[in-house]
Length: 225
Image (cartoon, rainbow, N blue to C red; front, side, top):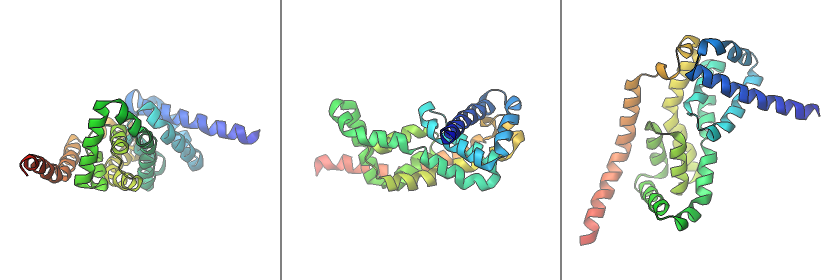
């Protein structure tokens, strides 16, 4: 009975952490920094709540960088690998759903078949790790990248490695915001320099440009071959 009550308490703590973190990100941070600090006073309690937040994040479609912000607030720069691990773990549910259902989706929809086919060709041209890394660097929804990777048949190992590499810069930005309570109080999104986002997006585009160009040239040449 006590064990069940403890598990329920941790789950509620995770929900509370999620609500507090989102409020700090979007609404009125000054009013919620106190409760967030209270959770951070106990590393075990905070860690369990962060795990719960990681688990429910895909359901709520919140940005993955929020996990790094929370990790930075609770653990400081030591929380960087924790934030990266949480961002990698939270990519798995949408990836597996897409991977398991891709055959049925392709059989039932011509659009899904074309999208999956395009994803497979991109993965073949760039390699799974490079494709995931590059698309993670782009400012697109993380869950969309996870679903695309699953629908394209990218292997789990490639997803894990590519996600860790591609999310690392976002994790650094998130932890930097979380480490400073002042920046968190000003709003998480406002703490990200747009120049950095453009630079990461440019790097992602460069990683994809060469393979995509070679694929395009190959397609143009194939009808006459």
